[in-house]
Image (cartoon, rainbow, N blue to C red; front, side, top):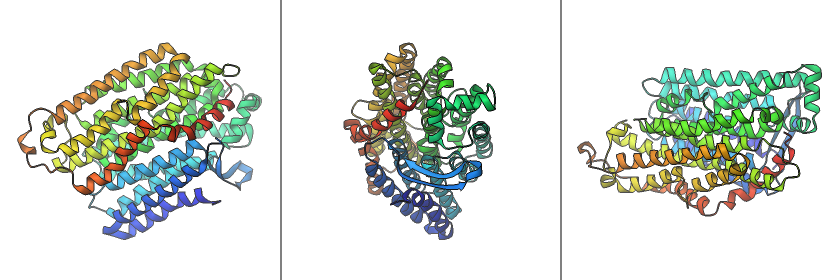
Length: 504
């Protein structure tokens, strides 16, 4: 199907309109649309193949004088991101069953956010891509502002301002690239960068500003990930957002930053990032270790896993920054770099799945406890709700990196690839694994074990419907832990093509 990506992007928009008019049936409409979107995304994933190149390409002139094209396409990376965005949206809709106020608007905004995510992962021209990058901010702001917690106003504003600052950096850098090259197509710019033509054009028409442009792009993606010290918006936003919306934030939106680094920053500004390699690796390790350490001292479960998300995405940053090295003629270095990048892309998907599932369980706990999610509010739940604790334990151990589950494979690949390329920083990053284990085990001990508090003696365990709905996510964690080649076999050719095109 020639226009399948356009149809996939438009489907949630059409669904949003229907959901907005559906009133009380909005959730059912949103769930159907989300499931159809997931089915199409899976079909795209299985159809991409193992060639590593772009598939389902759509390209036509839009505003030629301004270098603007309607250019879509996906490779192994893009197809995996589509599946993640669609899967996380399904989870968010399932977790939103207690929304009773303005349900049409709520689920309409959720579907608009999904469309923004899909557009971001398929667009290959900056103008088109930037529209979707910004589109994702608007529904998120209103979802937090209208349905969030007590401090939802400041949290929504902080989220919007931080991400807009990053977007301004991206916009200014790409406007400068347009002035220098006359185009804004990611594929063409990457080819210019690899051949050295981009450097020549920027020097001739703008002067010595390449590093400044690279920093603008880095800022935009660093805020989105977020990389420390640009992370301060995230804990407050995750904590105050409705838990179902936090699922979308941690499961898909934060992955936009890592995706942007892989798709845009490294191919176009690899030379400048290579010059900053030491600083970037230091910030990646800081993100890993300090993110995990901050999670230790939190008393609210949503904030615990907000900081844990920062920690887990730090491993992706470590993998991306260790490969900022010349690769030509060095097979060992190529092997390590491909392992690190395979691990980073797999970690994007694994963490999105695992974190979304953990927050899904937190949503169930929140419903049963009247909105309470403090660490000190619980204790002994394993005796009262053994099925919930047992199933949530699978997701928690996946986050911990237990062998046999999906989290272990991606982190192992990252460390396998990173250690030969930057053993000093990788050794320091291992501290994050130890602290994360302490965080997860502390949550299990304080929430699941110990004496059962009297107010939870009537807490109901998971219903059959809840068990059935959460089972696919947990089974997928196990499947990817035992057979990661299902994903790695598709993304590895894309990784090899990416590495072959980079020039540092």
